Structures are given as structure tokens and as C-alpha cells.
Image (tube, rainbow, N blue to C red; front, side, top):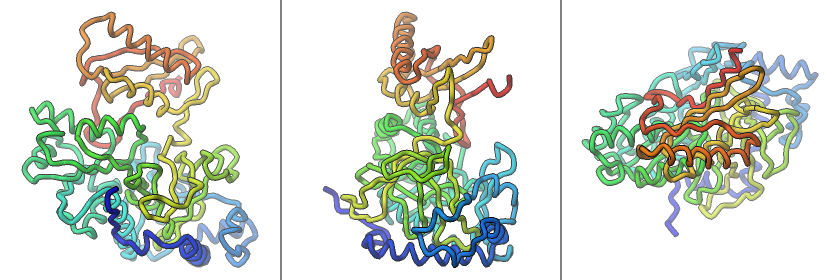
Length: 439
């Protein structure tokens, strides 16, 4: 069993008693701070007829009968959620804003220091050390991904290659020239980089030194992890975060790869039923809800993430960290699809597709409505070109039957040639096209 390494061992291995007491103290401070400094939260408490003095501690959390949502952040764009003067904000990031007004992440100097701390913990958990050459491929722009890795890696002291997004051939050349040993990337971009390397005559597993990887920003399945591992000959780690909290570093899996450790000295986490908003039990899936415990510029109370996961009942882990684990993100609550009366997540389809050895990692799901009847078609690339039409048809029939056991209906399957589906060089891949929204 490898020796576990920590960035901040004392904080990462706090006793459960000390960690709980720490949370209790910070929770009360957060409520008082938000009430005194944020008009939004002062008004939110007033609508309930409450003040922070009415909340004795964490055990009264559910008495705060409101949630903070993305709509609240958009309604208060850009600076209506601030709890500090605007000139104390030293860095800001924004979501993509594909649904309209973006949501912001606003940070003071203290916030950036805290972000760097939790990101460094996550990076070290994934294997980063001072000797590494760490290539950051997520955008170093308004998207928080690249900067999350950057702030953490600076604290660790690794050599940083801030390549940012796109220019894939140059990314591969950097890996060769600089001897990159660890890679951070959006999940789908790790596959794209492997494809580009192969087009350049470079085998990522043999011709580069990349043997460590930390990935996030998209939902990914165990099967996708296995494919990335084979392509790059690396151990993939799952990092979690989003703009409104910080970015990458809010949580991370350890060498056990059994759930992600949430840094509980910075966040209080609940899991609720996304439909009823009622608290669910440990090990029961629901929507993650966060209360920040250390944020200065933009504290958040009971913030609905829309991410579906579960909290583990166990509070111990063989890696030695005491911070509670939650399951890998299964889906986004607003990504659930419904067809023929059946609810399902796109990740359930991905799990079936990627189990097939003869298939690649790229696929596209299209849903439309014909004569008032919903119809799904799936295009999925083969790993290598399949010239036999019969072999394509047989594989498509098998996939359709496998998916029927999950979906209770049989989608139309098309096996397409490698590299024939659109690729995204910058940003997240679009794998589901629901054309019913336009009908």
C-alpha cells in the first residue's frame, strides 16, 4: 500500500470531533456575517421572520426554509450578492452563461488563499508534487477551471505549464518539449488530446511522460475513466468544483477511488430530494446543497448545486483523511431526460456504450418528436473503422437491446466511423441534442 502524502496533514486528518466543532463555530459565524453584510441574506431571513440568533447551530439548518439558487445569483448580477465593498474583490470568474446571464464567483485575497489551499490538497491527493511538470489545459480566463488548478499548483510548488485551452497540437508538443508529467483537463478534452497525439504519430502512453491526470467539469462514468487510463497509461482522478463556490478543488477522490473527499472545514454539505427539497438519508441519492464556511466576498447559504450524488455514511477512509466522502457526480438535476414516460440520465446511456470494446469514446444523442411521438437516435464512433455492414448492424442491435433494459424502449443506433462526430477544442462537449424544445 503506498504511503499517503498530504498537503496540509493536520487539516486533512482532523478528528471527527474537532472537525464537527470547527464546522459548528464557522456555521454560526457565517450566518452572522452574511446577515450583517449581505442585503440579499438579510432580506431572506426577514421573510422568514428569523435572525441568526434564532439558529442555535447546524442542527437547526433546516429551519432556514430558503435555498439560494442560480436564479438568485442571476437576479443579483453582477455585484448584488457581495458581502464586501466591490474594491475588495481581487478576482472574478463567470459561468458560461449559455442559459442567459452568467453566474459569478467573486473572491477577496483571503478567498483566493483559501481556494489555493483546498486546490493544493486536492492536487496532492491526486499525486502532484514539487518535482512534477503540471500542464493546465482548461481555460485561464473567466471560466474558473484553469485558475483553480493554477492557484493550487503554485502552493504545491510544481512547475506549471499554463497552456490554457485549444491549440491541441501545440499542447502535445509542450508535453514532449517540457516533459509534462501531470495533466489537468476537461474530461472530453483528454480524449481529444489523445486523438491529436495519435494523428501526430505520438502514442500518449509511450511517447509522453504524462502518468498522472486530474479531470473534471463534465459528468463521466467509470467506463470513461478506464478508457482515459488506457489511452494515457495514467491513474485518473476526479476533481469537483464550480464557479459559485470556487472552481476545481472543492472535493477530490483519493487513491481508494471510492467517493470524493469534501473539504468540510470550508463547506457544509446537505443532500436533498430535488423535487421536494426535503433532506435525504446518507447513502441516498439527491441534490448537493452547500453552505460556505469561509467565503468572504460572496458567502452562500444552502446553495442548490443541481448536482446529483450521495453522502457516504462512513466517516473514515483508508487514505487517512477524515473529511466525509460523497459519490461521484451522477448527473445534473436539470439534465434528466424523459421519454415514453421513463426518466433517465444521459450517463446511464454512456455506461452502456463505453463498455463495448469495439467502440470509441465519442457519441451523440439526438431526441426529436415525430407525429407527437418521442424518438431517440444515438450515433457512436467505432474504435477502429468497421467495413462490414453486417458487423455494424449486429453491434447496433446489441447496443439497442442493452439500452432497452435501462430505458424500456429501443433507441435507433448508428455505428459511425472514428473521428466523424464533431469535436470541441474549447469548453464542454455537447453530447445530447434535444430537438423537442424547438417543436
